[in-house]
Amino acid sequence: MAGVPQPQSDLIPGCPRHVAIIMDGNGRWATQRGRPRLYGHHAGARRVREIVECCPIFGVDYLTIFAFSTENWKRTQVEVAGLMNLFRRYIIKETRALVTSGVRVRFIGDRVRLDRKLTQMMTELEAATAQNSRVHLTIAINYGGRDEVARATKRLAADVAAGNLSPDAVDEETLPRYLDTHVLPDPDLVIRTSGEARISNFLLWQSAYSEYEFIDTLWPDFTQAEFQRLCTAFGGRDRRYGGVRR
Ligand code: FPP
Figure: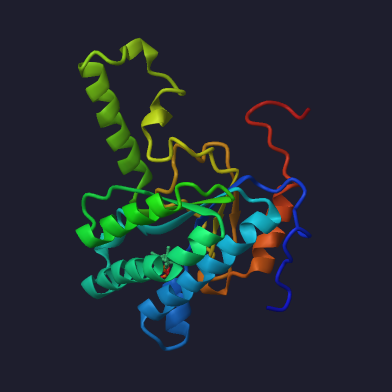
């Protein structure tokens, strides 16, 4: 593809180690073309592949993408079923490429409400890629930041009740060990496409000190070149974490 970054030659100085993306705008992209919303989601899934591919080239070690929120069940039954079907198709279609290209896949979110076939496929993909470490791809399905903190707190409270954890030991280091993301670093950069400037319940705890990019591009139009531009711009950010410039 013209303009596609080349392996080994496009490492970005100061590249964010962990990028999280709210992939918004599939529906509007499809509507602009007079097509059903699912057409946009299918186009969005193709973008996922392209963005995953360029992560190791730029130097992004962790990519976390918001595929379905705890609030997305409010959509029509046709759209929800279509998205669930798309996730199954994605796993079937992409497994081989993900395994051979060194991508480790994890899923976050509450699996209880998902259909058994899908959760089985998710677990199998996680197992099939468990030895990989070139890029860590985390896909959020039936994920909500508040729901995640509530589920984490429930498990933490159970440990306290069982005498495995003292209430005095609960602090900012302890709670994240109960989050779905416990093995991941916090995101350095959160990108939201489609012109909306809100975080919609995504990685609430983890993004406390993330840098944000809200861009107008609809997700199916998001290119590797734009991703490269955002990762490069991140290198120039002054991150002070509440402190002062050093
Ligand atoms: C938000 O756009 C997008 C979603 C709720 C679904 C995201 C899913 C994908 C990108 C597809 C596939 C993902 C994987 C991992 C295979 P929207 O529908 O809310 O867009 P709108 O705001 O224009 O209506």
